[in-house]
Image (cartoon, rainbow, N blue to C red; front, side, top):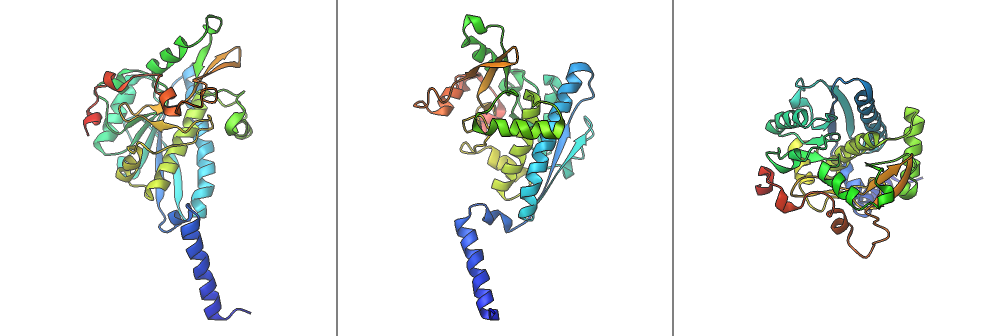
Length: 295
């Protein structure tokens, strides 16, 4: 049987080892509570399905993040908030499913005045990224400029393909397992909007973990770091560009429910840095005229 001194010494050694050998253990020191606000418009038809997919994707990421959060004494929750009725002082980060640019700009500007980060998962308009764009606004949805750039690389035989963030047929880099988890939970295949919702909540959690805080200012501080990267099961580290806060990410050309091209093909051109390849899609820094660039 261990003596009290031996037990204390043993526990001290375990704590010391975990703190310095396990990079995640240091986040357990002080618990935080992260509250994500999900903004979804009341829509009908196909747009309603998009909103449902975003919510289902975010719910999957929430369930996965909760397990990790509870392990280290943290809390994470997500609440749906009606447009213009958010209780801002209780929300740490917003996830927006508004597809129209005007609504996304209005809601993100309101959040910006409160100093709260805002993740856009549905609006593709270039104007949100080029002019008069709030400094708290980050884009997981691909911009129209990114989509147009990707289409220009397709062969004539692929010209009818749609450009997507995700597809249910993806298998590499953990994509198959993610598709299975979503299918098992939601009862339907993972779509681009579902992936965007899942990734947005994942970004919220991992940003808070890196910041060791759920304070909106701390989250923005991490999001603004050029070196911050996220894993979206796409075969390349994903990050936000400094000049337009657009997520760098591979896109997929899909035709007849089949992925006919990965854009760009990171693996095929592995000698070229991934960011250099991804930055060929969308706006270059010289196109953007956002106030946040000067911050």
